[in-house]
Figure 1 (cartoon, each protein chain N blue to C red):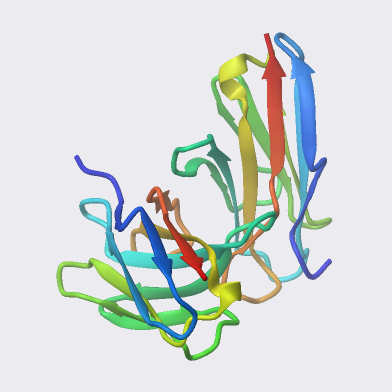
Figure 2 (figure 1 turned 90 degrees about the vertical axis):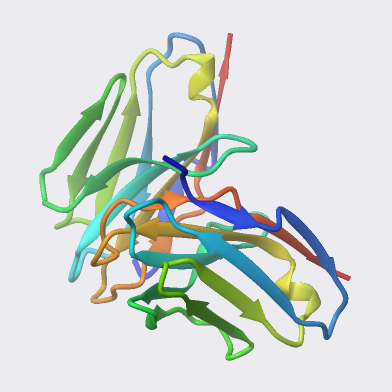
Length: 113
Length: 112
């Protein structure tokens, strides 16, 4: 049973560019949450997708957007990249309400230069 | 408390020592608290999901307690082993929000 997978593992982008990160949830899970972890901080909630819709959103600007596909996989898009967007981006999958146990992927390390 | 706070920030113990960490969270409108273990170069792994005041959960040598009225949870590790070395994160759903808030974590290093 494959766990949560994320791609790519690492990414280097230039300020102003756009980036797309991908996540495949654990088999049987229907809810995907995205987190940003900056150096020295705990993971910060970006948004959560359920039934192909954004269900909850954290305090992130509209430059951060996402999508969930019918197979429950998800994408995180960030436009007009800033240096401050450099971070580890984690995806977590869960079942239903989103309050239950989350299974995390290994993350995508994004560096903006 | 509006944020989730974890203490201590880091901890060095000897193999065999028992240790504990604290997670403090908003005590109003509590929904759930999670503990995760995050080993270097791996994904965060769920340890406990706690939802009821007075909850006590145990997994092997690791246990956790929950006090939602005063807004804290303790994580205990009995007889620490080098493989327990990791960052331990807590996340709360509280304060009327369905958005999880993570603490910064407690980094545990167990010396052989």
